[in-house]
Image (tube, rainbow, N blue to C red; front, side):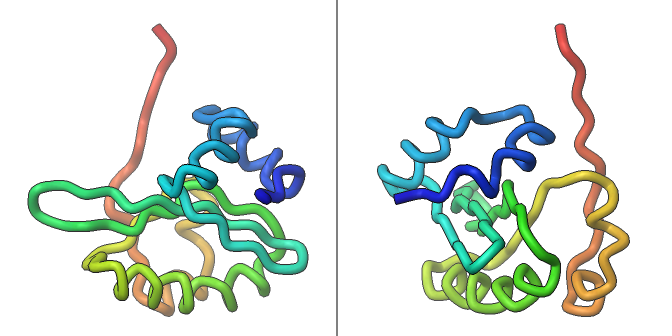
Amino acid sequence: MIVLSPISRALHYAGTHKPEDVAEGVAAGRFQEWANDDTVVITEILVTPLRKTLHFFLAEGTMLELQAMVPPILDWGRMHGCTHASLIGRHGWSRVGWLADSGWTEEGVMMGRGL
């Protein structure tokens, strides 16, 4: 069963999914839920013609737990044929030292607007 309360804040900032959408995606196997004591990460595998990407799109919790959780999640992605990893989040993520130290780089900026 998905732990929804820890990702409520991340869902609010993302503005892309409701808690029930995430629960349904995890139950159907479209999303992967990674949970630790106080930290929850939601990933999905994105398949394009040139690569298979493990995409981190929701994370909430403590930075120390998240840092410990990422390497095994990346290993899981490799075991499932992913050759790339991506994450989406607020600009603050580009200033997280351990992400840069472990090979993450800012690849662009995602922008949007309401219509």
